[in-house]
Length: 508
Image 1 (tube, rainbow, N blue to C red):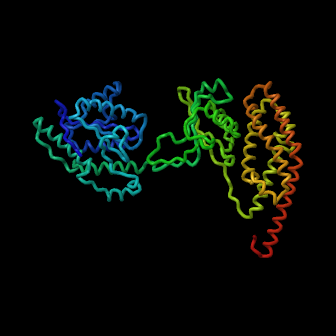
Image 2 (spheres, rainbow, N blue to C red; image 1 turned 180 degrees about the vertical axis):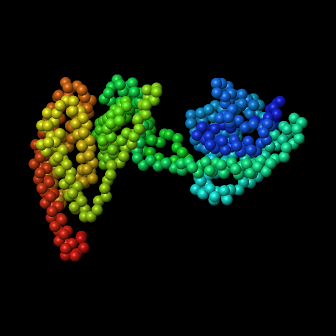
Image 3 (tube, rainbow, N blue to C red; image 1 turned 180 degrees about the horizontal axis):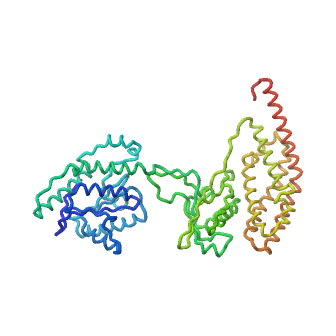
């Protein structure tokens, strides 16, 4: 693999330049140590930017000067890339230009872990000789199994460099030097791999984030102009766009909660794409509330928000984990969507269905029908304007939870319930509640948007109260009958089960 490298005209020092991403500093340092050990002092130079860059001088000018003198450019690559390899990308491009003008005295080599970098995709590279399987070994196991052949590409390359330096020494009239034991290419590569293994052994093998996550990035000044919503140009970034450590895993699919593809979009586009979805308003309100509650420097973040996913069955808590403020006025908010606990059902299916149905009916009663409920029609009519938007937001959350619980209780399959209760009760309640729910979901966003505007809130308050009162008139008697029927049926089932158990017979 190695080819002859002659020193540039008038140049008596063989120079290697190591280019690397800052995240790969530890591995690049090990590579530099390997080459410094293999080559003699004074007649060879290994340039490592942490060593030769002088403060107070333009970095690019210093790099250009070093690259002009470089014989071999080494690109250390582990798969960690950033902005076209950042400064590394510039270094490679500049050296390519030098090689086009004087190719005979230059060479570019990539040393890589799992694959060559894109900047050298069409050129031959040298693997560092480690894999993820090696990292599963103990240090003692790895070292005992580590064997380096003189025919390996990196050993041959180092051997060729040593020959070039030896010729340079002779051309300058000095006697040829003999390599020390520690300068043998196999020994140098052996120590290099051992050093890289020891470093990688302490790095992350994988990262699994079971929760869905998004980051919202926006300008603080844009929010100041509208304290009730997010700026349309705010960016939503789903988890998965960031660089991951070696083999890191993410669950991804954060935007699937909303029925959207997992890609970055603006807040304005998010609103457009979800405008017609029955849960779209609750998604917007929950995300907005969580972020604005932490803006700009508050610590009493509202992490009580609950939403339903696009499927109408899966519930998520919306939790703000970090709020980051930058000097350029940008803010970033990391939001987790934590799936709500779904308890496993045990025992007899009949008692399970009845218990779920009874709980749902009682929760419906406490939410809309009991005298002290904030969401009873006549109480809404007396709610103060400054409190109404917050109550509306809480009502939207309760509507989502009732929807989820109804799905879990099987109320979307009425045939399941006909053996427990009269079908007429269910139909009457559904016929009264469904249009009411649709009207409420239409009114609530308008109430939230009218925060601080009494002239707009007054008619909306009356409209919401009227919808809830009309529903109460129809549902109240049916709800009471439904609860009594379910209690009676549950009592019968429990008595029958206990009777069978006492007689020592197996339960059916």
